[in-house]
Structures are given as C-alpha cells and as structure tokens.
Image (cartoon, rainbow, N blue to C red; front, side):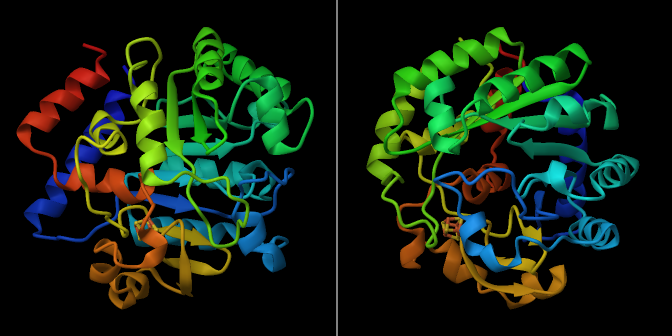
Length: 331
Ligand code: SF4
C-alpha cells in the first residue's frame, strides 16, 4: 500500500465534512516551516535565499500548534529549512500526533540517524528524505560530500526501527533520468515505503537556469511514469497525467498553505507576494481567482505538486477514485 489506510480515512472524512458544509475553498495539507535554518546550502533551494535575513528565526511551539489548528488540515508537512534543527521539534511532533494529524517530516537526512530515538514509529508519521540523485550527483547538488551516505544510513536505521519512510526527488533540467532510475533501485532495495518525484520549480530568488520548462518536464516524466510498477512511486497517477501532458489541470493555490516564521505565505508555497498574520486573512485577502487562472507570469511554467495535486482531489470523479484506490493497492 502506497499510503496508509488511516490517511485515506482521515482525508475522506475531511472532504465529506467540507462538502456537507458546502465549503468550496479549503486547504488539504499544511506546509509548516518552523524554521528556515538549514545545515545545507543546496543550489536549487529558494528558501535559504528568499529568507536569508530571517534564517536565524523560529516559530514558537505555540505558534506552530496554533497554525495547525487554524488550517485544520488532516495532513501536516513539517519542512523548513531542516526541521530537525528546530528547537521544539519533538514537542511539535507529539502535539501533531495528539491532534490526530498525519505528518510528512521532510528532512535532508543528515541528522536523522542520531535523532531517531526522539520520535516513535506511527502509521501517522512518515519520514520524507530528500535525494536528488545517486551518491555523486546528490552530493554535488547539496554541496556536501558524504551527504548521500548519511541520509541513506538514516533511511536504513529508520526502517530497522519500524518507521514509515518515503523519499522525495526533485527533477531539474540537468537531471539524467537514468541516474534517477538507479537511485530509485537503491531506495527500493533499502525498503522505502514510497518515492515521491516532482519537477523543480523556479523561485524568483534562484537565478541559476536549473529549472525545467513545461515541455521539458513532460519529456522527462514520460520516462519516469513508466517505472510505476517497478518502484513504490507515490506521485499520484492523475497528477502524473498532468506532468506527462495527457490531462490539463488548473492550480489550486490555497490547497497547501504555507506557514513560516514570517506568517502565512501568500499566494502559495512557491511564490511570495506577502505574508499574513492569520490563516483567515490569507484566505480572505489573497486574490485566488487571479493565481488559479495562471495569468501571473510566474505561474507560466509551474507544475508544482502542492499547486496541482489539490486540484486532483477537488475534481476527482468516481472513475478517478476507483483508479486511485487500485493504484494505492498496487493492483
Ligand atoms: S501555478 Fe504555481 S506559482 Fe502559480 S499560484 Fe499555482 S502553485 Fe503558485
């Protein structure tokens, strides 16, 4: 099973509740960035550039939990920065589990092995470890020799300790899909529960020409999606239709709201026009129709999963649902 049944049950219950109440615009996954502090300076990272002046800051535990309650999503992605550097990370994870949330804990894996003892395995807690290629390629992208080995050791130790572990791979213009295939073979052998793969997206703050155009994304992802039966890919099949050009989707920018040290990031995870101090302000004051229309020039090449996967959920037909269930069960 690619995702735990408890996650499906929580998400279905949440969607039913929203539909019964007649709500049209609601979030699905909260992207929580308690700090942007990081132990790496990756070449494709927009956060360490955009938040350069505030990297030292962190949200209080109370602010984090309040944000979780404001958005009230069934799933919380804890990210950053490197969340293992956040001072109250253990209490934050415990607080989320106590609220019945499903947690995707995004980490570069460097500090994972030595921090495992601070957390407990749960079907609601998934480590999500970043790997952008096999050893040489990954170490080059993260600008740190030995990074790949440490992260893979973290993955193996977490699996041995009974944790759920998935991985996340970003595909850039220079990415060689044959290298990604070798990486996925290694990760599958290491016993990971899921492999997420998504195109890199252009932050205004990242000036290097490392990001793909939509045409380039489609070419690379046609190969990647053909591996669906070989590897436990968790990029959902309808989103992959979009990435390979066989389905068109409109962005749902409010689907995965981002809260960080500066407030609620508007309009989306990727681009920042402003930050609001409350979730309600974010929802009321952002011109969602404009961003969903794709008319903003910064949206022209964007196919980012946190913008488009919520659309998949919103527009799901009975046929799509059946397909998703079969896909989750590897049928
Ligand atoms: S298309 Fe991409 S950049 Fe534009 S609002 Fe949606 S997620 Fe943000």
